Length: 128
Image 1: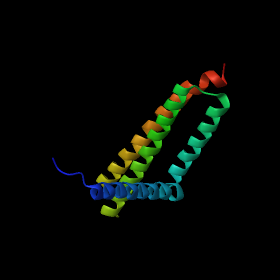
Image 2: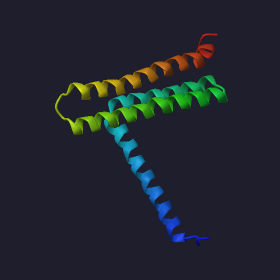
Image 3: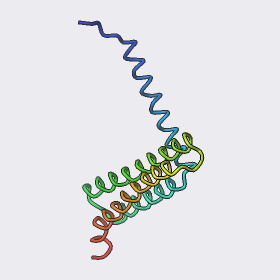
Image 4: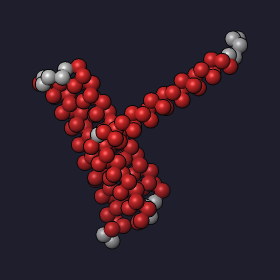
């Protein structure tokens, strides 16, 4: 049986902390530079405030945060796809445009689902 190597474990942990730092830097980049992400973050804050105001249930909080995470995560992925596409082919190209449109379409689709989910959660609180 191989001997446990504390140094390797320490290096592994340090690399994980560095990875968290890179992820945090990416999140801050999105918040500072991407208008769509800023709008979605603002909506997330608004919906969270409304959730506290109307006192949604624990299950509704779980669903709301899952949907918020899905929308914002997909927006981050969409932005990444657009950045890579623009880097690979800075000039207009039909196929690159189609890829970018599909990624944006995924965000719109999830956004529509998020609005429907918000309707299911908040309708009884606001209109009953």
